[in-house]
Amino acid sequence: MPVSFDAMMRYINSVGRKLARVVSRARGDMRTPWQRFLGRFELLLVDHGFIRALYSNRHQVAPGMYRSAQPSPAHVKQMADLGVKTIVNLRGEGDTGAYLLEAEACRRFGIELVNF
Image (cartoon, rainbow, N blue to C red; front, top):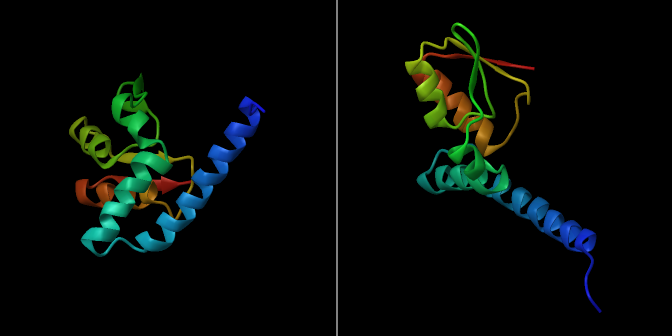
């Protein structure tokens, strides 16, 4: 019996959610090299960061003001180089590899991170 597209997508989503939970527990606060690797894995694969690595969706809205997708640490550096002083995070503070790496990059490059 053929499997419907909806059933296949539900299965893929359930596997993805389980993987995210496992990676999040093992990642912890990213103090060890292995935990940092898992944080990057979570950013790239669980949080779809591989898409944002190819296309950041960053556009200038006004002089000195940009909007973009969730920035990776490399994107935070690029924004610091452009003179950006504040990043407004509309996803809110979270216990994800993407958020922890973004917050760390903001501290490193002197950018204020505001969470909503």
